[in-house]
Structures are given as structure tokens and as C-alpha cells.
Length: 198
Ligand SMILES: [Zn+2]
Image 1 (cartoon, rainbow, N blue to C red):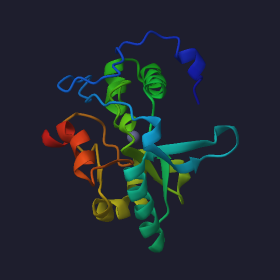
Image 2: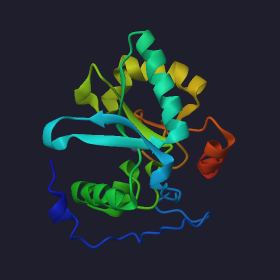
Image 3: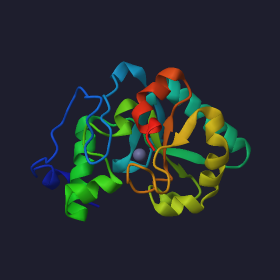
């Protein structure tokens, strides 16, 4: 849809921090450290042809995700991971695309995180879609799918929760597709700032 090469030339309005500072936020997003490659596992291959890519997650979170996907499948629900771990550079490109689309970093930050501030950097967050409705990937209509309804009932059993609910305190747009793993104390600790605020 966009030409990333053209957009990446724009000045980056948000400085990138490899080492997050715990109390500092950018446009109400919390800082997150980028996971090490050796902490990650492949959780899906997505799309076909030139667009084909592999998605990664933290091993612990990825195993829990696999269990959740299999459990859903038993009930005829087809959950597909669309986007897992992202590097700072990948997020920077996504955020720049949103700035171009929406006109300002402030508006972009309502629908996307600046580089260094995405839950996807941790390897513990994942965007999910319904395999039966691929056109609703990363769209609000995902809310109308069987996969979403199943997730709202069962994700908790597998340690997953929705990060950006309706009217969340961060003022970030409702993202029914975006889920984070908080099933262990270590995983929950990564998101403690976001989870503890109201
Ligand atoms: Zn996401």
C-alpha cells in the first residue's frame, strides 16, 4: 500500500531509545526494550509470495500462543498470528507510515506506537486475526469475528489479555486484534506500568 523506502527518508520526530527509561512515555505509550533474537521462536508464516514473512515471539509467550491456537481450533475457531516481535527499525517504519497517513505524530500515536514504545518489541505481544476473514486483519471489524469472541472468553486461560481496550486510560484507539502475554510473573512485570494505571 505504501512505499516504505520513500517514507523512511522523513525526519523521525521521536528519538529512539534502545534502553527504555521506566518513567518516560511518548504520546502516552510506555517504553519497551527490544527482545534478543535468541529469546524468540517462529509462531507463524504469514501471507504468500513476495509478502510472505515469518513472525516471531518470545519462546514462553509463543508456546502459550500455540496452545491457545490449538484449543480454539478444537472449537472450529481459526486464529492466525499476523504480527509478533518487531525491531525498533521496523516500528519506526510503521510509525512513519502512520504519520504520513494521518498527518502528525500525535495522531499517528493514537493508532500506533513510536519506535522504542511498542509492546511488539518485547516479543510478548501479538496481533491476531480470524483465518476465515483475512480481509479484517488489523481492522476494527475483527471485533465481529468468531476468533475475537473466542479470545474475549478464553485468552485469559492461556495468559493473554487485550492491551488496548475500549476507552483505555492511555487514550489509544481500541485494538481488538492486539494481545499481550502476561501468563508468568516475568511476562506480567514487563507490562506492569501499563497494567497498573487506570
Ligand atoms: Zn499490535
